[in-house]
Length: 88
Image 1 (cartoon, one colour):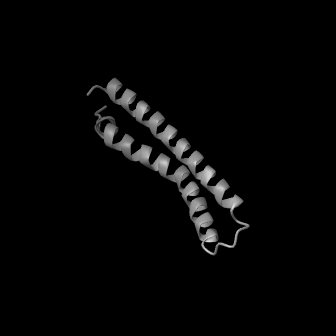
Image 2 (image 1 turned 180 degrees about the vertical axis):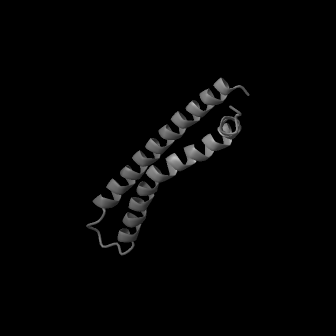
Image 3 (image 1 turned 60 degrees about the horizontal axis):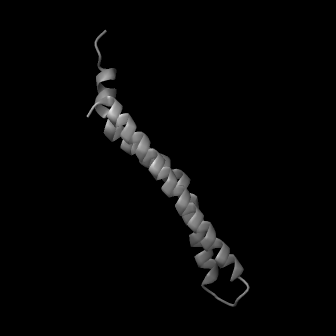
């Protein structure tokens, strides 16, 4: 695979994963909104579900860059190693 092809594939994967993270965050916000509307009912399990929804929303901003870094290292390790060990 050429360097240009790898860059293009990485860019497409990054945009697709960013789209997926935003879509997932939107779904979580809708779930949190529906849970917040039901908070006035006498449901003992509701606070735990609200906490779980909040925690799910919080891990995406950390997981997306970490996943992009892992994919980037896997795709471009040969180029980095060649650049690092290049003789001058």
